[in-house]
Length: 155
Image 1 (cartoon, rainbow, N blue to C red):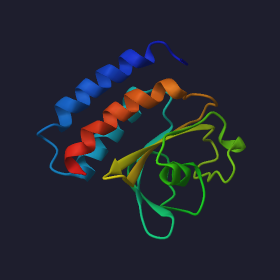
Image 2: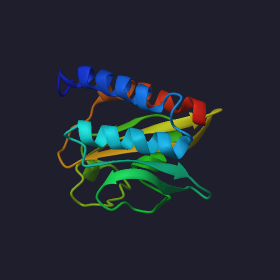
Image 3: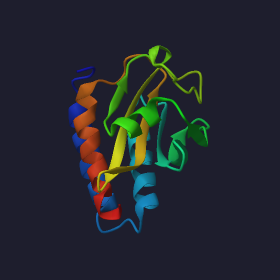
Image 4: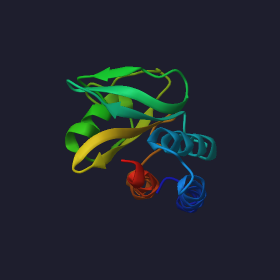
């Protein structure tokens, strides 16, 4: 675990998001925007936090996000598409070492991506970047999946 306080922080964030989203968010976009805003502002190591939606022909389209300017379309390669293709979370301690990494902002040094799955198909991914290397590990996956479960009623 990178930061032993992170698990408790994730739990507080989950509880806050549940209160903000459950029976209050009118749709998927609103729920995603709320998740992104809270995560981005409550997790100090987040440089970029957002969603990409799956599109046609092995490409992704930017959704709600916070941080620096995003790539509007990701195509054919990168960490996000790897998560889509494997239907699994991807933790990248050093983005420069990831084959085919797409640098929307060169300051990004590490990344975690989790798929949002509906009926076995990836409909979106949650993508989080940090300006520092090795800011995510496997201990981040489960709590972030719990946060993403708040989207279930909308997908």
